[in-house]
Length: 107
Image 1: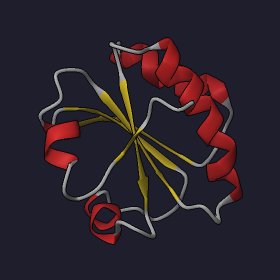
Image 2: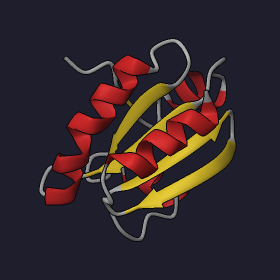
Image 3: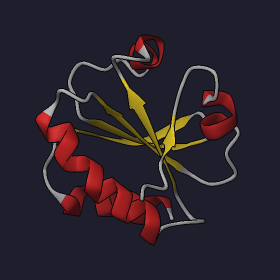
């Protein structure tokens, strides 16, 4: 079971900008193979870092405004954030190690 939050334009402020812990935002689409491969890894990391780092997912097809706000050119795109500040960005799927490093840097 995923701990990830479904992020929308309506809940972005509460879940990311005003979050008291860092947030990893996964920008994805259901038709994207690499996006589907990254999902279970992010779910596992969300569990491991529960209480230290929050995971939020944005379906770019359902939330074009958020995709545009993040200037999405390619998916999957994973963005590490503290409040409104972008700490790091991973584009594409390169395995678990870069994602774990992103979580480690935030926690």
